Image 1: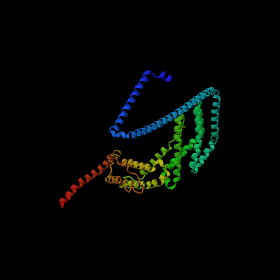
Image 2: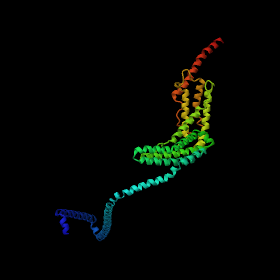
Image 3: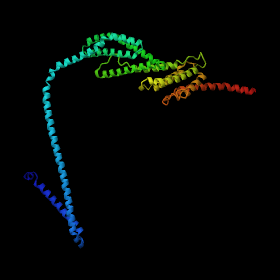
Image 4: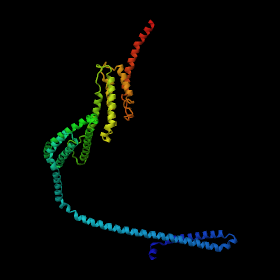
Length: 430
């Protein structure tokens, strides 16, 4: 109590005492009002004992509730204090552990300089281990080159490509190690030495690329007679794409990439497919205007038949041969549409024709009819093909189609102009 008295000032005590007196007076006044309300009439005095008993019982209940609430609060406070004590003990333990760890680290730090030689030896050992692992493959390069030649002769391109990748791995290891060397003057000679040693490797890659290009360019014949050759070529292309991605990421992180990477054979594949489609469309022109009056009718009819025949193979066989991510049906649809559009534009565009070399009425009629029926059931809209042609742009631009129809309309006008006087003259004679 002396301690409390020393802490709490007399002013504070006086304020609290006045507050308690006010609360007591308000409670007494409130109780007096309640008693007056219940004892207003003389007969209410007969219930005095009952009222005392009820008030005593209510007081007992309120005291019990208050005691329970206070006890609950005290238990919660006790639990909180225990948890705080546990947290304090844990913090002291962590602090001591960190202090011990810091002391141990200070003892270890001087050892770094002592282990520098050991670290250098470990790096040397790692490099020698990698060199030993690649040494056998480097020595067997000539043997592997001969084996690859034999496999290519036998048409076993997948096995041949696997061996080529092993040779490339050995070459890239040597080039990567040379890249790490700082003596740039000697590095050029070493790179030339490695390049000369693996000269046959570059020849094998060029030959493999030629064979794959041949199979991709002949995709239609391969899909009909030898789909396994087409699948093999595409599997090799996918392998090359993975290696290209690896070295692209490697160059970003380590700054080194082999001189022939990325090869982008997938891009080459798409270029070859588009070129083959263009050749198939333009190759259907077997006649010229000088050779046959209906050369354009024959040409466009053959184009229509070729498109139908090709898309039967594309939707049935090529769809199973090409990887799903190639979206090969829509890709071919885009190739055929654009190549045919370019070809027709070249035929119809007045700017690309010499003076006096205009389309005849029959040729204009043939073109307009073909453009009208191009997306119909007799061509791309054939139900069996199930092609999504909704996003295709017009086969001929509006200005070119207008120029073509103008030729037809002007010629018809000229014919009518010539016919009408003859008809009038004939009627007069009659």
